[in-house]
Image (cartoon, rainbow, N blue to C red):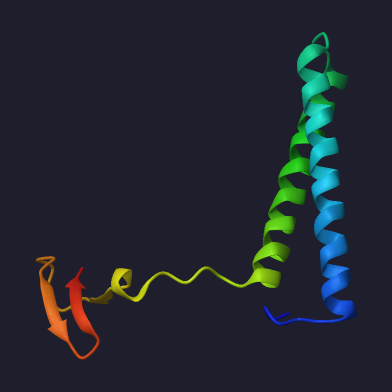
Length: 102
């Protein structure tokens, strides 16, 4: 999916994004409740499952967000081309401007 996705594909992705955020909030609610409960194997399992669900939902929601909005581009002056010719870390002038060696 590109940053210019339109129509039903974009709407479906937006629905999944918000659904995943709701799932992440519910997972964090389970984790919060597990913190307040007395220790037992069931509480430990609930804590673990809630944390895994929240983390997985947040990762997937982030992937959808990046797919919908596109990656952030750095300003041109902060992008350095790296060369492995020498290891002194010196700046070199090249066709694309200053370059920093590794």
